[in-house]
Image 1 (cartoon, each protein chain N blue to C red):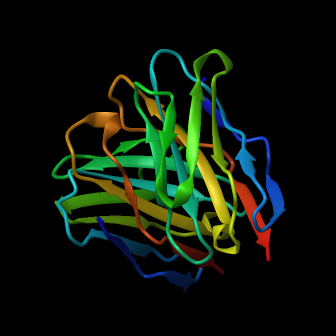
Image 2: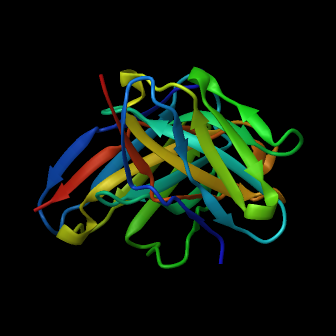
Length: 118
Length: 114
């Protein structure tokens, strides 16, 4: 099956620094990638949707300048948490899809990145 | 507003017991429905999905789900669980009209005891 990787799997940083998380589709070209955030014991919340070569579409309430998303190629999307603060500590998960059938395309999920901001 | 709700947050079963996890959705128009599983330390995996047609959907690992439109439900079932089914299960929905956005339920943590 399709494989999506994330790097790093966990990161600890100081408050005020920026952190970049990578999401890669290893064996398929991802036309669309999604970034989710998962709080402890809660569900996944979609943060943004990115299509290769175009600007990401952010969900309501998600700060575009805080969470920078770049989808520079069909196999790589990055999420940069800028000027991170302790409240940004969370589990960030990406997913990717390759089809063109819209909502019927299967999304393949990465293993997630745990961010801890001190 | 679009939403997905899972009523059981924690379920504990013995091996060979039957499983049913509830999922209800609130969507206008057509809807696509999914069940994902997350085994400890692993990423989300698709168990099954429903787009249209036969409301009884069979997935991997012996799981099935039934779409009941009148009840806005898409419950997940397995007749006999195994210890290896211990995981967290997420119901999700997307707009059947074509928009990709997946909305997830809160998840149900299943523990199966040998």
